[in-house]
Length: 276
Image (cartoon, rainbow, N blue to C red; front, side, top):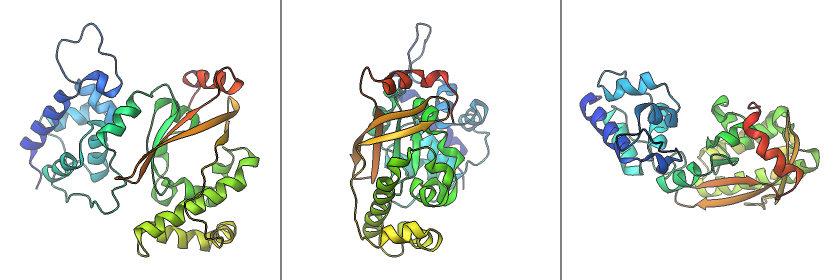
């Protein structure tokens, strides 16, 4: 059963504990109170201010599990705090076996300071959990994908539009890397895991995946340079720096370009172009 009073109090308390600079927002000269405003917390969680405000006012509907996960990320909750949030909202707590959908507060703080840089947090299945605004401008909104298509590994072998976002010379290396990454995830998670089911599905749907899968590569080497094709800016030659969170089986990917290069100049234009 949903505990509206305790849920509202918990949300208000956690919102008040976060400072604007903790989440990459300017404090501004007119801010009179400590903590985040409701509209800021709502924006971080990807929901309307009205919806979030009703939760804090003890009159909102029962939020869904995806909505609670978004609130947990937006408010930088720890795993224990996330579980508490789910219980207050009348849901079972998410399992921690895969530990792949919750982003730790430390990783979120780093991401918040990279808002003008293309960056994202991805799971070991290649599912993007969150992107910076610059990352959305470069790659698109990850919320556009649902189900197995949340994983770029799955899309790479089933959706030709995904491949169009990378230069042809990158395709063979990315195919090997994605297959090897999925094999490593399947090995860690076991034969009855989502990773194993995705591998079986791709073997049935993609002859290329089935062929690459036979090589039994595990983990693989992420290509040092990616040639990303943006619909308005053209080809950008980018390096991908990786920060691993082994406890959550997540990676923070940060995309940069050599200073002074044409691609570096194009990255500066990302805020001015629409998301693909």
